[in-house]
Structure formats: structure tokens, C-alpha cells
Amino acid sequence: MSGVANILQPLVILAALLALTPVGGCQGKGDAEGSPTGASLVGRIAPTLAGKTTDGERLALSDLRGQVVLVNVWATWCKPCTAELPELARMHRIRGPEGFSVLGVSVDKRQRLAKVRTFEQSYQLGYPTLFDPETRAIANWGVKGYPTSFLIGRDGTIRWRRDGMIHTDDPELAKQLEAALAQPAP
Image 1 (cartoon, helix red, strand yellow):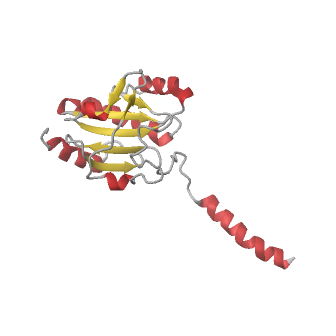
Image 2 (cartoon, one colour):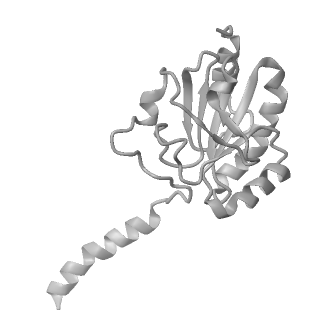
């Protein structure tokens, strides 16, 4: 019996450690084989990002060229994603006149489109949301989990990335946003 106990003891310890390890409820898909990691994109021209909004209109990141854009990848089932929506809506509303825009990208499943629209109205987002249930639009963005945000400069270059939630008056984002807005339009 002590042989069985010797075998089980490490398994019990491993199970206990795993139980104590925080698990993110908003895990996304890993990088596609051969696609760049998100960190390697900072300082580069943003990959193509285009699709249909939740209203069915075609929209591309390139349509916003000359503006500073915060691309925010999110889902309705992700608590940190929905917790940051009021701050993103506030930033979009307040900083819009300076040439700033938020572009949401919802990765919710196709059958949750109505839920995404409800969130847009409830949170009074005021900015467009691409609906990307198969994550095709963000395939080359190196997104590993949600929320993930990218700050795109007026010239189309990725200036900053955040894997995780943007908090109210986020000092790191504020600093990056000020620098990006100070950059002249191309």
C-alpha cells in the first residue's frame, strides 16, 4: 500500500497546486502557426483589419488612417472585457475631437450577435464594433486572450499593446495616447 501512496502523493500535490493557480476566464486562441506574436507587432505597421460591423457595414482599420485608433478585442462573456467598456466609451467620446477613435472587435460566436448589439447599446459605446466570430479579421494580430488592445498611431503603426483590462484613467495608456495624439497626421 505504501507504493500506491508514494505514487499518489505527488499527484495530490500537483492537483492542489493547480487548484491554487489562477485561471483566466477569458482565454483566447493561441497564435496561428507562423503568425507573429503580438509583442513583435509593436513598432510595425498594423496588419490588415477589416470585416463587417455589428450593423452589417463593411469597415477596415485603413478607413481610420490619420486618426489614433485603439483596437479592442473583446467578448460579451469575458468579465474584464465588459468591465472596461465604460472607460473605452468615455475615452472615445472625450478624445474623439482630437482625432482618437476606438474600434471594437467582438469575437463572440455568431449566435451571440444580438447580445453584442445589446452590449453596444447598454454601454453606449458610440464606436464601431467589427463582428469576428471566426477570428479571421484578427488572425494576424497575435491575440492570445481577451481583452487585448492595440494603440495604432496616425501613420498606421502599432505603438502599444495591452494583454488584459484597461482601467479607468489607465496611466500607461494615457501616456501612450498623449504621445500618439501629438504625432502629426501623415
